[in-house]
Length: 484
Image (cartoon, rainbow, N blue to C red; front, side, top):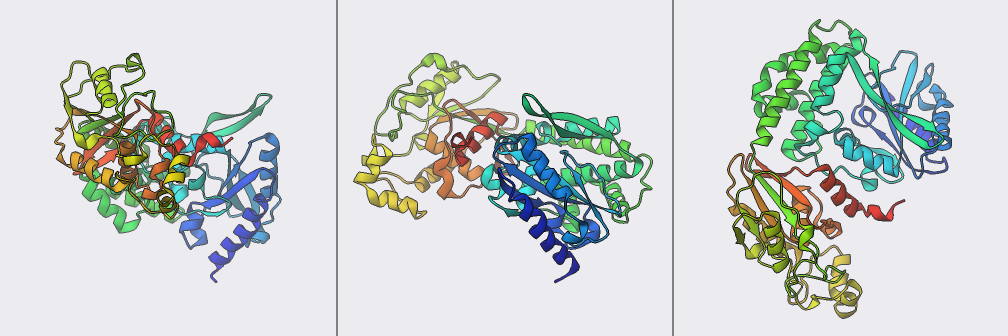
């Protein structure tokens, strides 16, 4: 076992082992460089994520005190004191005399909020996580990066520009008071060395995350692979590759002589990337998928093609804002009425492929009634299979007709098309676009009238869901309503 592996094993045994025993802690994870690298010299912080049931001052102090009590020799780093950074953000406290534990503590609700607001960071954590207790993605997953994340998320383009302009690095920290705990925004002025390192990380993280978006994966691209992607996918910004390599060389050498114009150069890079991505995605062909408004038969029974109710309240349907071109709808009454309410001046094109799943003779049954009358169907689900409903369809049948419809769509750049359909059809859409295993698609519940934006880029369809939509879909996937 190498020196690095010995140290990592000691950190897992001591740091994770002790934190996981604190009352109220449900999960402890090591993330970041200590999971991905094999050289102690390349690791500045020991990034540690704690998830607890209820974040109180008592739990917070217990976690911090637990780490502060560790001697460097216990984790294979004799001669070093353990320093705890309990803020949120890439602050650096590394010195030759200190082992820095970046201790980030959340309760379940806080982790959910962080995933929704900071998908880049949380997606990184999910990639390589050494953990005791549930994996972070089991508690609340990122699923996939989406185009709007680059403009709206924390550590997105606008946040980087603001930090560079102010010469600071922004971060958050907890404030405890009589009313509980809240996150407070803060910032730290950067010295020349850390300003240069931050500039390097901005360029690196933005290109790496754009590669994840482009390839719909969670791969950390480095070295020549990253530069090759940069030049191919972002040729308009290839002139900045030289600056990036220069900053990387200085950082790896632990130098502090960064170019005097590094902030100006990286700010220009971020601004040009922002303009490029905004133009690229705002002009992309767009399809807005919507689930029909609620009916009286959305009562927990299987409502498919066998019954055709109208919506409960036409007044609940508000016309869509903005311009849209064509409008497609399932021919079923509830979808047709919804489409006419959303787009009152449009001509509606009906398409049989947008119908709800055919539940066959299970139409109108509830789950317990299905289990009693058709136990083999429920047994097949439990085994991870995709059986057809008796005399009806299965999930794959719906997927095939949905993608047959989508494959025939021809949407021009800058055009918006509206498609009104049903829950199972949309859960198939979300399952495909978000890369979910088909065995989990049944967990996804698409709220009535929820808008799901989908963009086309490079011949592929890409989810670009709003924060509201991402939260609703992920909540249903993990059963969030059942959590405290």
